[in-house]
Length: 170
Image (cartoon, rainbow, N blue to C red; front, top):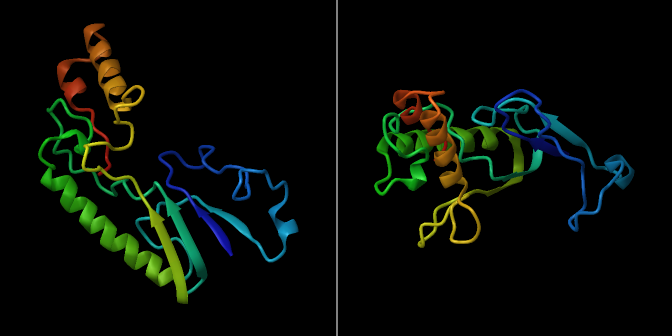
């Protein structure tokens, strides 16, 4: 059974995409492939999402960086994302470790004996590159920072609100 577990800040906010093959060609009706079942899950992945021993093969791309709780250690600082900090914020790191343990336990309960789980996630490389922050193109994080700075300059938010913005991921 193929299942699509998507993390969503707002329930069912158009996260589920049309099904395609490995080359990006649309598959109008996946059921025509035979013995393929597609399902979306509208709950978070930090807990068990499916019945125990019900998944043969699980795949997750770019989801596990979201934290289940928000340590808020960046509140009052100019950094919105832990990866931009010179020294890794310990509370975010500890929350990520707890989440990772819970996520793996939940997926292990869902997998049938002999089942497999493939996980691909964002990371920070040896050059300091990470999601939205490379030397190619515009930095997503610089754009966020500039937008919040402009809101403050325009008097739409105050300094506490500007410094209160950070993303709950690691």
